[in-house]
Length: 413
Image (cartoon, rainbow, N blue to C red; front, side, top):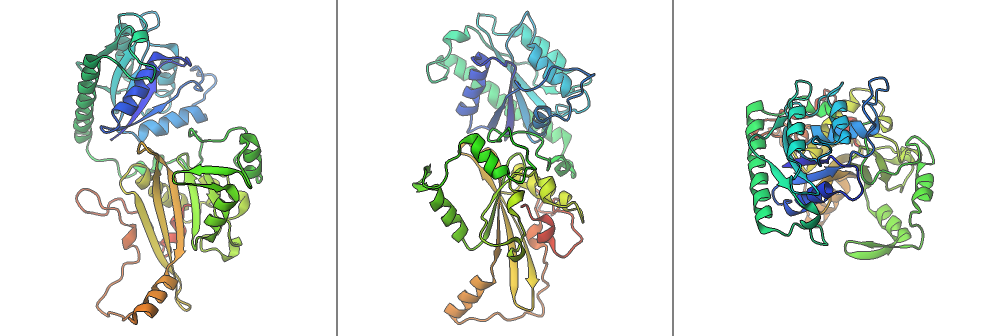
């Protein structure tokens, strides 16, 4: 289950942020809780509409792609914070991602009241007609005297408090399941919410250089003081120089691409000119949002959105498309899209591997002495690998495509 945790405080040293981070770590076996920040969201002002700004669009997409939301609120003068109230105003002005979204409220306070009045205030806001969040009823988690509640590692120390919070999380997960059952399956067009313009922001987004700058790689590297050349990089199971990593990736007999969780095209293993690639890419495209990498012809953007939505939402961890590109010279290209996750299971982007697998098949036949024999009774479905079965075993989520070259249309570069 995917949950979004929103902290109502923008203070650097926040007990509510500590509480949310503890929940994300301690309950990772229950759910994937992604903690998002609201410090960059501007104060709500109808005269200066910021609905399409990066911070608000980022929150919108995170909430839409989550099964539920947890909000942690401090108490300021018997109410929730101005910062959180402003965020909810933006999320109920022209966009409504919280509508029919299950929400759980928690809170921590410096003294003994545990943000009880702020939670009541926040509950009324979330249930307002313009917001329509589905706030879990009948429960409150009030962490009072928060200054004494955590150890030096950010863990709660009181066993009874942990027990209460655990029961509340378990109840919320059931609440989410019940609300989803009442609402029915995800709308068939939910994939349309996938943002190919990379207008949001991931925690690895490099700011300070325009995405469409043809020298994005060089300028982003200078801005971040990125390692290069003979600099060593410690990997999960090895230490290599940047040069060695480049040599290694370029030597892999496939075309590799990396797109982050904000749908920004960050990398490909540049080992041949664009005109010789199966899925053409150019050096100046690195850094672009996917909307600019792909020309929007033949509904390409819709195909890409569908593939990314399938991977982001966990319907599939891998998505494959295959097509014969040159029947005369025997060339069959497979586009393999793989969802990438961090150690906590959070979606962190998609990698694409484009491979002509005929040389592998040919070598296998040579080594085994076997032959490929046509079966006249075999009806080949060239789009079969593009199907995504739902719970009933149907292919309702198959990317719409009336073109035979499915792989070229949906290539996530």
